[in-house]
Image (cartoon, rainbow, N blue to C red; front, side):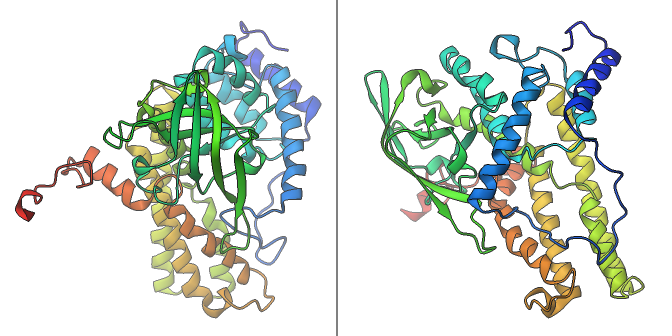
Length: 415
C-alpha cells in the first residue's frame, strides 16, 4: 500500500510492485505479418451473453483488487473512496498498467467515464455516498439512458416522463441503443418533468435502479449479427428524489456533462495511425504498394488519422488540466467517423467482391465486420449532423439551426 506523501518515484515503485504481484507482463509486441494469427477486425466486439458475463466477473475481480490496494480511483475525493492524488499519479499508474495483461475494462467505460463524473458533479450527497465508491470498485456497473426512438440526434425532444409523487418520481417511457444495460446495476436517465417548458428546460436527470420493478431490457440485433445494444422500457418505475441529478428541470446541463465526457471517450479512441498497420500489409500483399492512386489514397488516410491524433491529444490535455471539454470533442468525434468511413471505402475498392463473399482467404471477408459496424459511429455519441451544428454554431459563429424551439427568420413570411 502506498502513502499519499510518496514522491512520483516512490509511487512508481509501489505501483510496479503491486502490478508484478498480481498480473503477468505482456510479451514483446510482435511485428504484424499478413496471414498470421487472427484476421478478426471490427468496431463492436461481438460476444454471446454468457461469454460477456464470464469476462465481466474477471474484470470486476481485477478492479476490486486494484481499488482495495489504493489504485482504483487515484484522483477521486477521499470522502467517496478515492485516493485524493494528482493526475500525475494517475498517468503513472495507467502507463505502468498498460504493460500488463489486464482483464477487459471496457465494461466500465460508460459507468466510470460518463456516469460517475456526472454523479460526482450533480448528485446529492446521499447518492454520491451510495454509488461512487461501489462504481469505482466494480461492485456495481452503470449505463447511460439518453436516446429514444424519437429522440436520438435531438436529445432534447425526449418523451420519457417522470411525474413527482411526494418524495418519489414515477418514470414511464422507452430508451434505445443502451450499451451494457443487460449487465448494469444503475443507469443515468434523463426524463421530461415539465411538458409546458421549452424542450431543453423541462428535463431532469435521475439515477435509476436497473433491477427495479417495471424495468424491461431487450437486446437489439445489429446488422453485424451481434447484439451490443439494448432497448429499455420503463413502466411506472419509482425513483427516490434523493436520486435526482441536479435541480428539477435542469437536466439539460446534467446531460451536457455526460455528453462531453462521452465525446471525449469516443473521439479520443481512434485518432492514431495504428489502425492502418493491417491496411499497409494488405496493400503490399496484393502488390498495390507501387500503384500511384492507391499510394495517394493511403497517404491521405494516414494524414487524416495523424491530424486527428494530434487534435485528440490537445483536447485530452485540456481535460487533464481540469478544464471543461468543449466543441473540440465534437470535431474529434466527427474526425473519427469520417476517417472510418474513408477507410471502409478504401478497403472496398481494394478487396472488391471479397468483402461480401467469404472465400476463406485470410484478411478479406473479415473486414466485413468493421464495414458493417462503422455506420453506427455516425450515431453513437451524437449524430454527424448534430456535431456539425455544434461546430457551426459554437466554433464558426453561424446562425442557430432553426428548430421547434427557435424562431426562424422565415416564420413570419409563411403567415
